[in-house]
Image (cartoon, rainbow, N blue to C red; front, side):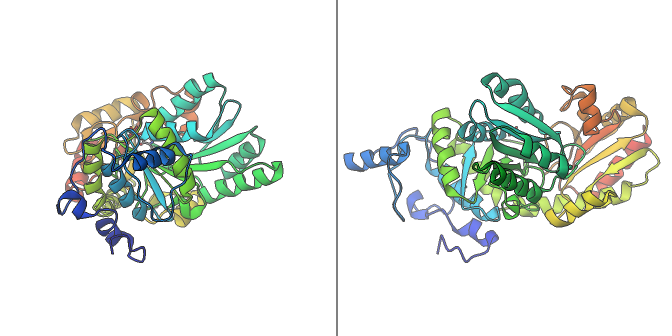
Amino acid sequence: MPNDKTLRPRTQILTRGFDPSLSVGSARPAVFRSSTYVFSSPEAAERAFDISSGRARLREGEQVDLIYSRFNHPNAEILEAHLVPIEAGATAALVFNSGMSAIMTAILTFVRPGDTIVYTVPIYGGTQHLIEDFLTLFGIHGVGVIAGDSKKLDSAIHAAKNLKMVLVETPANPTLIMSDIQMACDSAAAAAKAAGTAKALVMVDNTLLGPAFQHPLMHGADLVMYSATKYLSGLSDMIGGALLAKDAELIRLMSSKRGLFGTILQPDECWMLDGRLTTVGLRMTRASENAQQIAAALAGHPKLERVIFPTLFEDAEQKRIVEKQCDQPGAMLSLVIEGGKKAAFDFLRTIRIARNAVSLGGVESLVCHPKSTTHSGFTEQEFKDAGVVEGLVRVSVGIEDWRDLLADFERALNAV
Ligand SMILES: *Cc1c(COP(=O)(O)O)cnc(C)c1O
């Protein structure tokens, strides 16, 4: 019963991966804070080390003793078992102590000096900094391609030397430009075939629309990555990350590097996040419905140059990608306020319900000014390419009553 794969995801998340008898009958998992685990026998210890080091492979149904919590611990295992059913197409998962450590561990597992990573831009600031300012020092090449342009991405993938990873973040932040995941995967496969090399791994940063509304593994992606800090945890009170794959071998390889780097999520945070997963679909659905109401109501507002939200897209290619790839438009929206930076700052000063903070994906609404905060490290050209203008305010819509949020946005706009 607990691991019945015929059950639907929303049921599996409450039934699989946790055996109450291992938590003295507790209906919810206990928190196992131990740093080290007592072996059942010296032979079991030897076997656990053989498996953990990769010298031997786990047999079907085999359980090995736990060793040490930097490698693995019960709360990580329970959480990973619960992440798998909510990501369509996934067979295995790994949890990390931040989204950035998930990205770093994935890259350092599969990419070597002399290799190339092709990535969509704009991409999360930390990811860009990691690739452009840090990994380049180790001889890893990063090639940024403007989001949403499948032809440019295809050319960059074909032109890349020793391409090992294609990293797609879709939608892009804060302009919500969509990139076609399947086309990126097809390009990677075609380029590998033409060059007679192994296919580069396609990793999708699915933080903004997943796991509820966008399913990259179903479009051919190899790896899905999350900042669990955002929608997965949903209460803006923890930092975490996750990686999922269809091929469990990829997860095994990254797991060994996670143990080496020490990037596993700690037991208490695993326990917190595990409880939150049961409501991620509910929270995201409510937040997305709120965002749709607010976007529709604010479209055409006289103080706004533009409301950026997937249901309001006009570009045919962007509409096509949304239609094909996104179950719902999500809960991120951007407002371009007439009057530039001063107007944007006045708006942020006046707004009462939504808080002026970076980050996103919490039950509470958050607003920020990307040009002077999250994206402030951009060059003028990057601002231009990414469409990050002075009047742009990014909104992460929460689960409050949308009528109160809308009234607050309208009041703040009138004060501009
Ligand atoms: C927040 C975020 C990250 C980084 O995650 P952390 O948990 O802060 O390390 C990466 N990608 C996206 C899209 C994010 O929003």
